[in-house]
Length: 589
Image (cartoon, rainbow, N blue to C red; front, top):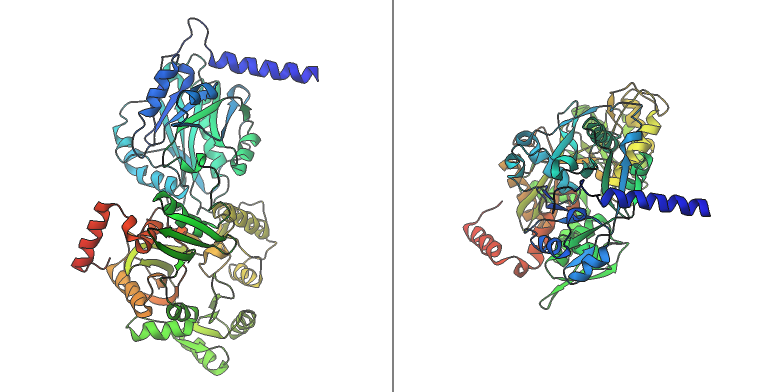
């Protein structure tokens, strides 16, 4: 007991010495570092609490300032309790003097310095996907020769896409820190990436960079309930410090200080809508968290929603979307290009369809989330097995012509395009060590973590068929760098990924998606096409989803446009006027 107490006292004394400088070793006073998303205020360099509070109050609009290394948060918050709050984050430190390097190198990606003019948009995209405050558009270009900030990105070796980012602050260069400290900020990984170990690689790369600069430690702040990140940091040797962060009460930080969050137990598709409603002051009443059912109210208007399905969608529109064969007939009559289709029970017609097209798709006439769907079936044996599997789901089974290409989801709200994204089937990449089964299980865990448990790869007959078609069994060990799909249907609930193409989509595809929405007469819909290229006009209609997952399309403003539709008076006046002018002018998208 005494030995443990002495160790604790010694650790606290080391922390005290590291943040209370002796005579002749003081850093620059009132140290502040602008990071583009907000400022870091190094509280350990402020002798005057009033000055620190004044700086916190100077926080810019749409920014998040953080007072870090606060040793006496009760004193600071007590000065302005209505304006400040204690950030529910832990401070961790990695001792760089005894850092142990990585025993393996990244596979399928590499780490490099960020190039501002090339990578700024990609970095902000990843911030948005992780619900982080984005950097001001001009910040990266205007940093000039400031050397206290260092940015690294992870780049996919094959596609060249930025899939992760991390920011470092060199304390010696920022404010002549005599302790030669450093800190890590904004570690973020694209939740769609299939590569393992991106976050760990970025942390290690930054740590080794600071070691080369002569830094003695690297600190970070992490939310207390971010169990995955904390597990990674502790595995790498980070230890928790008795130091705190203080933030200003603002809209960005609201969820950290308001207490009970009505959306906490909801899935991501309901949560994104509830958060936007609360941001606008719209009342929220959760009716059934497990079912995604909630009620919104403002100014006497009350609307019930189940995720993005609201009372504005009629029962007729809902029933049309629920029956894929009926949907196909309705949109075909409106001039939309559709695949050939037959009933699975007519085996002669199915065989003729296979002979004509060479490959087919089998799916239940009713259903969602990719259940019972099998794609690219090129033999009658595989079609029969798929029909048997689909028959386990309620209702009829239909068979359609298979059209190669990419799965494009278009979100149409109020008969206007809001977002467009390519959805890709789940795939894994070999590392020369693990079996296909282990790779699938690991990728499934990664997708589940990135989507709040909404996306996983089932180890079922369809997965085995796709693995076999790729030339493997579940127990084979693929060579390093070999990537292959383990599902054919590009559905997010079966491990697929989604990639925004809103700015690229061809006007004819937009027109066709709006035509689908008007034919069904549905105010909010996800329209699925198969396309060769989203920037080209060719397409084939697949289906319409009456309850599209709006959270899948961040950073596009899907939740904002949904709330605009439900509560148009909640829009800012300028945005409302602009919206009315566009409507009067007849703008379709």
